[in-house]
Amino acid sequence: ETLDLAADPNTIPYLLFPTWRNSLETPFLFLGDIHPYLLTNLLRSMIDRENQDSDDDYSLHLNLDLVNQPLKIATAWKDPSDELVTRIDQIECTMRLMVPVLMDRMRKAQRGFVARVSEDWVSSYRGGKKEKTVTAITAATPASVDEAAKVEMEELVSIFVDANRLRKSVIMDIVGATSEHQAALFLEGLCQFLVGFKISVSSWLNQIDFSD
Figure 1 (cartoon, rainbow, N blue to C red):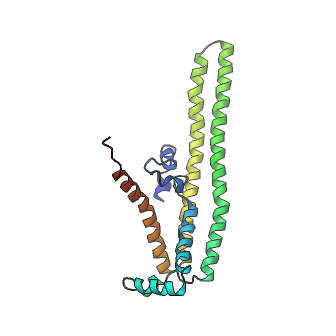
Figure 2 (cartoon, rainbow, N blue to C red; figure 1 turned 135 degrees about the horizontal axis):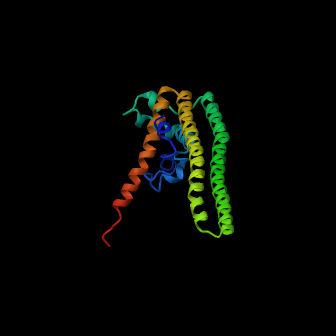
């Protein structure tokens, strides 16, 4: 909701193309923030990790976990219910419908901006040639760009807000479909996943010798 309120024609370039994101985070971004697909992929990875082990390996893993974790936490992802698996499929189905729509809106907004500026510039250029004045060309172009940019920015704000709402909806759907302990583990894992990018970049930078 904070990002929704912060989105306006003046801030949208910074929200859609955040300069504070590092190179490791960029591939996981979708219209300014984490890709919705990442959320369900992370959830499936948590489930698969616990259920791919053999029974013996799982028993050993469980016994080690019980030293520091309650039983419900240690077994949270073991043998997920059919309802949870079905709900994950439904969430992913919704994303497969919504993500391409948002991307198509983004492409159309960009095409519209380029087309409008190009058409206005060509019209101004031809008008300037007929009048044999350079002033007519240069004076009309900035206004055309500003007007086209204003229209595009308003559409980009709408696209960003819808993308942000999709992310929020996916998180809420996952939390609603999982148990209390599963939801807590999912949110914790998501936070650790995102923080890991910051730590990885910091460690990488510390290994570089900038003295040369």
